[in-house]
Image: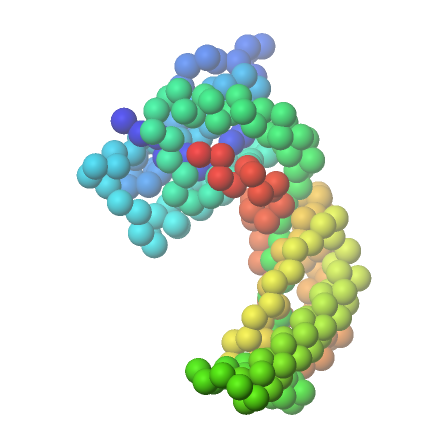
Length: 243
């Protein structure tokens, strides 16, 4: 039997000791309605459920089930979310993954303890963006191809420049500990800037209260704020693929 992994948490101490046996997390179901277990490994616990590769597959509905388990664990303490679809084929492979990454896990738990992720989404609809629409590259080669390639590169640079300027403005308004920014075109005259902020959990209310001020200052933008979320965007890359 394989193990589907949701996240890694701190292994809580009960009555002065840490249990060495897997324990059931009550009140939550995992992928395909499976029982969710905490699998102890030293100072950590890997949150898992049984998964049979031969009879089960993963689709979009399981993304929500995965996220729900991680969110429940996040409400109880620090979590390091695993990438959706992380499956360990045996107990030994699960133990090996924790042993191999123990130092990185410990450093990440210490860094993210008491922290939460917030999302700011900006949809920019500005007349200037009409000039930044995606450039179609022709299938042929020659002068026209090179001209369109240069035009596309120029438009991409201008779009990224505008996105960076707005993200700096958002950073000053919300003042997060860390941030991660992505940008993409959403229509012929629009651009979506998706910003993840890492903040102290104690400042969530203060962060949310800054929304009104941000909405007034960010011209030609539709802005939305969501969270708190588990710190999906602030894990070292190697922790996302430990399986």
